[in-house]
Length: 340
Image 1: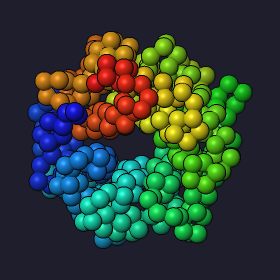
Image 2: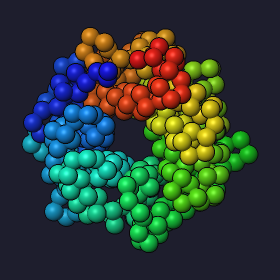
Image 3: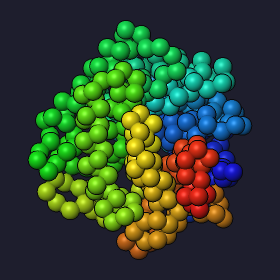
């Protein structure tokens, strides 16, 4: 049984709050497109998540401006345009695509309208992760792809494949000269393309980059995330801290996508290992799940854990738990039950 206590605590009548002070929600921190998009995905996968899904989808809907752009942060009654980003819009499009497949007609309708309204703008994205989120969204649509959709998939996947060709070197199989945040979505999106269209070029790029990334992240036998205090620049060692829950979830999702689309028990094993990062199989041997609140600590730091329990870390944890739960009976019950 998944623990949603902190999710309800961080949700008010408007949507998902951004930050907490320790485990106490901070209303002054406002609401972000990123967090409410992830929260919508969590709610869609909850048996009793209808009202939550309506709340999060409604926040996404009101965050759309008249000029067609999408607000990423609203705090204290103000729209903070300086923090708008293509990445956040890509995540929102993915959430809408998943929301369209829910069993709740009001959520379906709202998500379909938002998705169709913003998809044309996404074709102009230049952020690799924004492209990857949008590409994954298209491939996750629960309907036959139209000729226009197939053209969009081809355009976006070609962007990522060409980016990889431009940046790969003999010992560097990645899309950029730096490995930064939410890295798993890049190969994951191309695995989705292969699963949906059979594109072998997308598969080869996904296979090369995911294996390269996993060799770095699991080099010590457990998931050792690249820290956000410097990331990993080509030719240099990866930063150890701060390690973010969103990055643990990202690699777990990519490995599960690989297992689903091309098979390979080792990908499922790596996904399980990424899941167990939240439960103490990490550089400090510390659990990020707080059983007293149902929350997730915000990061692994040099001193231990960041004791705040904000939305991003909580939602990364819950999404990872929801994904892992699908494999409890079918594949490796012992490993998952030990970590839950």
